[in-house]
Image 1 (cartoon, rainbow, N blue to C red):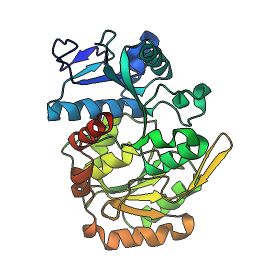
Image 2: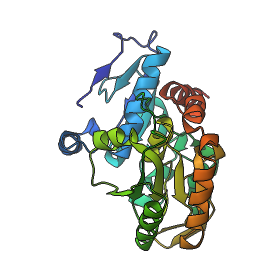
Image 3: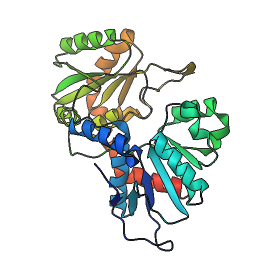
Image 4: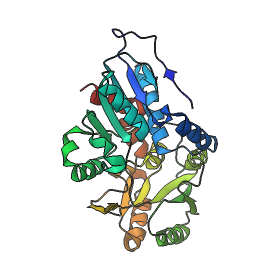
Length: 318
């Protein structure tokens, strides 16, 4: 999706008050690479965040430019992704073009990555997807703690609804694969006709279509900064049973904190399990109280594109 201008009037220094969005697609080679991935149907996290924001801004009636090379002086730059893009925007701010830079959430895993670019004094606010990521950033780079803002992206409502008589899907991303075998066996014993899918090995549209035939999603992952794949399940009213690894490790850094694998999993959306020992009990509890879960209602209250875009505007205008 090669976008240079969307939903934006011709501007002057006095009249433009919209949002200037920048992504890794600002440069040709990343844009070409991402076009190939889109052609294959592999929607990546940064693109999902971008699409959610612009859709939410559309619903709010707020104008925006995307990867615009020419902007009025004094504008605010919102860099969602791309280290090289952020470097270019920092240089432009230093040249007096931008008055403010909002960076994130898809720049780096750690604030010390890429030479510590997120610690650059030209950046006014740093966006992270969840509370535990803020804890991680603040611990690794205390000097930027006051700049960090938590902002979860929204998720599109595709109008899908879970099938209470559907199957159990087991989505494996990372961690102990033995848990997949355990979940599959339990699913068989419970009459749920389980199927296994591997993160990154399926087309996005196929995943969404599969949600219509899903009763429960079991998700196995070491960590998620937000977990958009879970949000899509919740929006389709599919409750989730998620491994709570409780550990995030990266380049010698270690964070022990519950909920790292699904930072926005709330009681209406499903349950955590700690490992093979309690997986069976958790699955039985979920099946017994299945009607008590209401993940779609929870998502419509908290994680629509429009609600997310409104929160983003509050951050950049603060």
